[in-house]
Length: 107
Image (cartoon, rainbow, N blue to C red; front, side):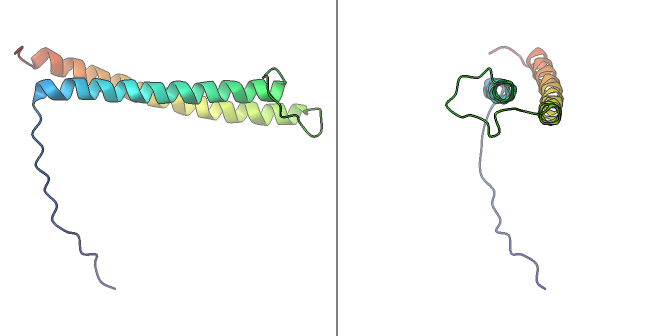
């Protein structure tokens, strides 16, 4: 078995510290937006199962069992736990950016 042949890729990217700060803040904002969409989807999942979401789709059978509700609730709970973990990582990232802003001289 041979090893893969990886080409030598050395891109030349020149970004100053002042340019990186808005890019990092924008990356946090985009991740927060994505997490908001995930939380909204989980809320709609619960609304759908409870029958409070306006949609053309109906259940077959028409009734949802308690076990089904508990399964969906567990699924939503797991997803929201992961969202919370990601929020914590974004908070750490934001704190690092604030530290970077504090040590960066003004132009």
